[in-house]
Amino acid sequence: MENRSEQEIVYGRRPVAETLRSGRPVHRLYVLAGARGIPREFFATARERAIPVVHADRVRLDRLARQGNHQGVVAAVGTRDFVSLQEVLERPLGSPWPAFFLVLDGIQDPGNLGALLRTAEGAGVHGVIVPGAGSCGLTAAVTRAAAGADQFLPVARVEKLGPVLRQLREGGFEVVGASAEGSEVYTAVDFRLPTALVLGAEGRGLASNLVAQCTRLVRIPLLGQVGALNVSAAGAILLYEAVRQRQA
Image (cartoon, rainbow, N blue to C red):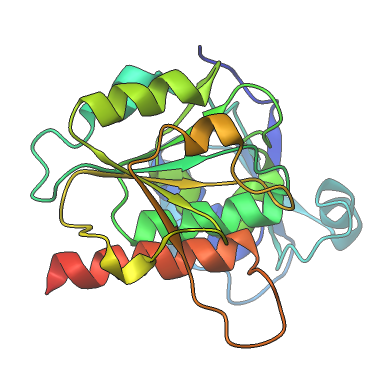
């Protein structure tokens, strides 16, 4: 199932730069009139792609960015599409690394989703899979939290995650679920194999029907009083354990 998020405003120099670099449709580039230090590549890319550049005052930029820290640059961007599941599954073809997917069970906070997408892109994840219900869309807030890295990572939205995990498991993937009740420490997993890493929603964790589809259930040791990590922090630890192993 494919879906389409609403048209968005992206602001801030890094998110706008990555949006321009990604090739995502940009309708207008707004630049603070008289501002110094705006990177020249913004204007060069706008010329190459025939993107209108509007020199606007601070009041207008503040309004467009809804008082966010725009750093003198705002872009009005086209809609961002979710891709098909098949496109995500085919992306590892020709890659020097075994397939590596991130499956997110109902991440609703755009800050967490953006942080996870940024880390996943840096860790070489081939694609991300999210459910059709109970998950944050690909909004401008997600792009900002991801510092634009989400533009380079395909995200598929599917009706239900259970059948997808079953398909991956039957296809020879290690389906690794993260849970405070995991039976083994995350470093015991061989991430050099084709892997789908499954992270649960904030608060409730992994749904029981998804736990049933996992081949491994792992935990991150916690030595203090806190019972669990934020999902984006946990995801970063697990994703970069995979990087460590794959580069060893």
